[in-house]
Image (cartoon, rainbow over all chains, first blue to last red; front, top):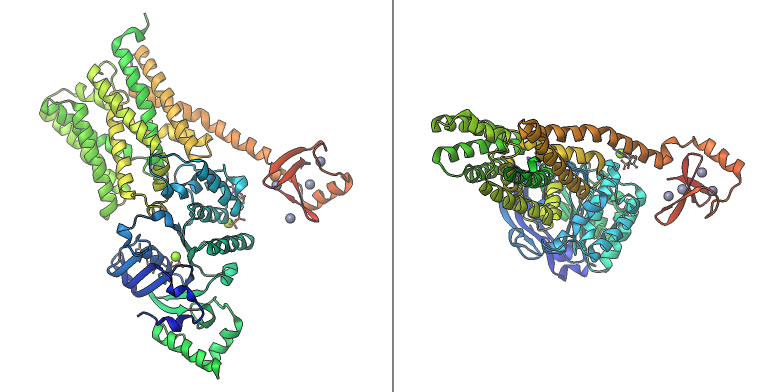
Length: 289
Length: 329
Ligand SMILES: Nc1ncnc2c1ncn2[C@@H]1O[C@H](COP(=O)(O)OP(=O)(O)OP(=O)(O)O)[C@@H](O)[C@H]1O
Ligand SMILES: Nc1ncnc2c1ncn2[C@@H]1O[C@H](COP(=O)(O)OP(=O)(O)OP(=O)(O)O)[C@@H](O)[C@H]1O
Ligand SMILES: [Mg+2]
Ligand SMILES: [Mg+2]
Ligand SMILES: [Zn+2]
Ligand SMILES: [Zn+2]
Ligand SMILES: [Zn+2]
Ligand SMILES: [Zn+2]
């Protein structure tokens, strides 16, 4: 089900912009088990979309589907208007996968891991140039790991490794950034640094899709929230209208609307997104009284 | 008279040196993907290839390359589409290859000595034709391993990320397997099929002890492989023993030497960053109060530039002024 634009956010002009990511009636099965169903999602240029939801609700699968890492059993996926299998402008996309570690079986320095974020920007025969090295140094500075550039990533702490993954995605100077729990285990100071970096990227026309449990300092950037529940989109709209959700827990972007919503519409915790939409509409009507 | 004056010895040495460079280069990618035993699996499959060559009277090197490559691709296919994990796929080919090889050699009626030369290496059987095939294949393997290093590294490090970076992950995975198959065949004449995997893996394990980055590990492993196979070949020629065993034992000897060396280096690194021996915070404060000392360019303490500031090493820690207090870096 697609949402009529007016209902989502009356103030955001970005909906007229080019659609960078689109899933229409998407369904996904992993290991023979349905994991996503009835997904309709489109992300426009300039938007910051946060994907929230409980563990196992399908957030990672959703972003992996959008990037063509997981095949759909139904429906269509478009990345910059092209199916992912035929897409070839990968330098426009940056990805932070959900990972426990940035290390593999052989030592790799922080700099080397981050440098692989530049690969989409050059043909296979060309070695890394000065621009590549400059950009790598720059993003290492951004995530505060410049002094660890030559250390083995396996010897970094969990949060530091997560910052390496963020730096790797930023290194390619992408237009569309897809971040799967980029701030998991990352300290507040570094989260703030990430938020500042994203703000700068947004000013230069970037688009961000971020999966998170706690938005933290990123909350002020987000202009649209998608809540996943049991493999479906249960809410898609501005953060201010987010219904409280007894299982999903932790996202209360603004205490005021949180309290009001509970008073006004007791049944908004329903998983069916139509109900959530109606609830949002009800609340808007209620506020206008 | 020096053994090196003999033609066959020069050829064998050239083959050994190139093998010593190529095998650890491919081995590094295998270790990175946690498929250290892949070389072994392919080596066993190549036995069937050699046996087929002996049976049909064609060049065993050629049939071994073909069969080993097919085996390597099959391992990738089983890994990708089959429900078996990588090591189970390896085991299946491992046993099938060796059994097939022994069976076919029996049918061909060649004595066990012929097969033995391929299983454990033999210098005197290296013909001029073999050496050229070996050299060309080894140079192809070395060139691809180095030129494609950034991409092969990225694919093995994080396949999902590599895919979103636009790299064809399936292609590069098969490429590494094929390079491994070719390397196995290249190494067959000097190290022998049963021990070739050791030359792919042991130098990498050695290099890992000392290196902090991927490039250093890769180049270090190639240098170590070259040293091990060159010296192993010479020793085996003088002592008249199988070259494969000698090369592998020297490689293992190098590993045994670097292990304590690596531990020592890591200890010295810890001493260079004196955080670990830092006194308790109160003592730190005390030392500062007593000293009434301003750190600066000529204060007598070792200065370490550190990002946007300078740390000073004193009383067993790296002192970093930060607003009203001090941090330890
Ligand atoms: N490879 C797989 N095979 C079978 N089922 C899978 C696979 N990967 C994930 N799933 C299932 O799909 C569902 C969604 O997984 P997903 O990783 O998308 O959750 P998530 O919302 O990202 O959770 P988290 O917050 O823990 O990261 C889970 O129930 C999980 O068990
Ligand atoms: N195996 C290792 N070898 C060398 N140094 C290491 C190793 N593991 C951790 N370190 C270093 O020790 C320090 C502390 O690491 P630790 O993992 O305990 O941090 P942490 O407080 O858990 O951080 P985080 O919040 O990121 O999880 C870090 O600076 C890290 O670089
Ligand atoms: Mg997830
Ligand atoms: Mg930790
Ligand atoms: Zn001083
Ligand atoms: Zn001090
Ligand atoms: Zn401080
Ligand atoms: Zn410092």
